Image (cartoon, rainbow, N blue to C red; front, side, top):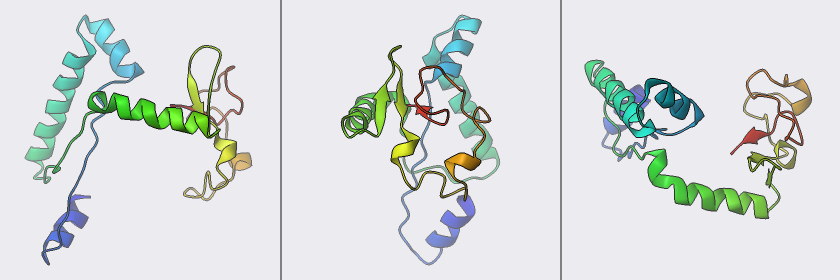
Length: 137
């Protein structure tokens, strides 16, 4: 993205670069618990390390770097909308999954159909899922 961003800025095209920071997920929570620290402490440590590495590589910083934890209310709102429209569903264990069969274009970017995709290769197969390729939201 840096090369494209620099190229676009050269002729004075206004570019607003937004880079998400995932500062909470199951892996972060589990690792923080293993280390005896809070998920926020672990995420802050690795986020700062990432930004230090990017500065050392002379990568332009993002204009905005929203953290997932700061967007939880909006994320929940969007997920609830997907459930209401039938694009997602709640499993009996409380998890919410995206229903891949509701999106006729699912797999278009990879040029693969659902039938061509291998269940379990990237997304864990779960008993709660309607379809093996459904993924947790």
